[in-house]
Image (tube, rainbow, N blue to C red):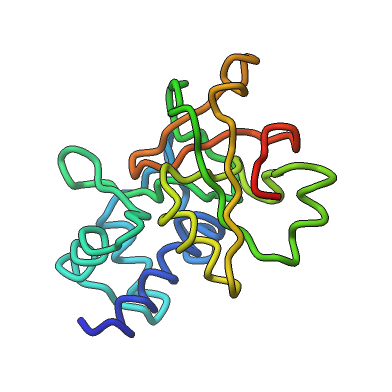
Length: 181
């Protein structure tokens, strides 16, 4: 597949594994999983046929590792970023001392007032390194990189989760834990 095809299919999968599984007749199972055979059939039935080889290529080549197969390769899920109700069955984890969040300059006034909020997602997404945060923030122009005092938040009993692709998840980040504002 070329880059354009991969991007198009990855966006299609993100839409339906994170936000609108019902639009193509899917129901997320416990943990956010969907049977691969059901996904491929649903994609084909909705004029977006994907082969198993193409699906595997998307999962393996995505630099953000948005999707994951289960251990036996029969189920797939989005790693995080859902707007539909789903329990990804992630366990609380101790974060590194500092995490990062990439954002657009236009968001800074609200972030200064309210901190980072999950909005229509299940969690706020935090990056383990500045470069990843820069890539995330660059989706909407010149990125602003914020630092998050994860050690202080964790010491204050804030619960963190780490998704399968290394993204750190938390319910919110109050402004007092943010640097780089």
